[in-house]
Length: 201
Image (cartoon, rainbow, N blue to C red; front, side):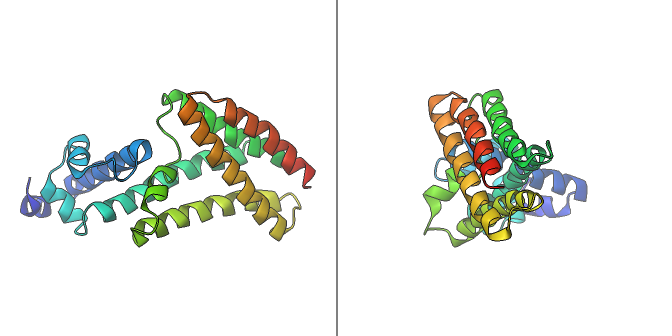
């Protein structure tokens, strides 16, 4: 299907093609980063054509990657939200975020880590669009954690600083888990982040 055919195809088919492109790109970025993901590989995974890619994303791979990061970030947000709402006790809730991430990593055979980290680190200074998209996701996660902490009488400034520390620990522990193919670092993080949150109240 070329760009003209894509334009005249039923709206449902066009939407499905766009979704496949975004989902395939999100998965590839999560597993191998931006530079390691080629347009040809995206198209093969999405079962799409060059014409359809440039129809939906005229700016090409960079614009598609930014949209894929937003999609992947939403999934990561859901994991954090599940953890944070799993307990009324904030220390336990934060610990459960780490444990859910450990479960997700183990179930994916250590491939499905943070959807932003692999791409953000290699693209800093080279793609303002992707850097901005990554920053927005990281800020959203910090705000989500900080809101949970503030609900339990931790002052705003302290909650924001603590949320930054929590997210940094989760990101670092997740990286070590992927490298070592072992969820122990996230389980250690769960234990110590719970203690840190309880000591901050």
